[in-house]
Amino acid sequence: MYGVALYLVAGILLLQVLFCLSVFFLRPYVIAKTPEGILQSEREKAGEWMGNLTRFLQSRMQIGIPGQGGGEKATNTPAVSP
Image (cartoon, rainbow, N blue to C red; front, side, top):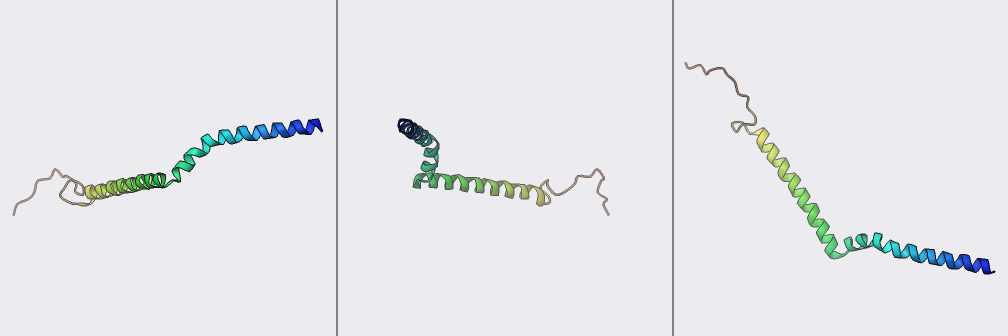
């Protein structure tokens, strides 16, 4: 009987230590799920999305518009006048 009681006490102490340590691992998750944390993560996602969109549009502007250095090749042949 005494041995069983020792195992139960040791098990409870181990669980308490695990619960105390889990606070440090679960706290960032819980903070992220608060309204302020959710808003912050949404702002970060929106900023990332907007930055990707801006980079995409800038790359399209540089490549696709003739006459602005993106779509034409330079040649060394002189233009023939009529």
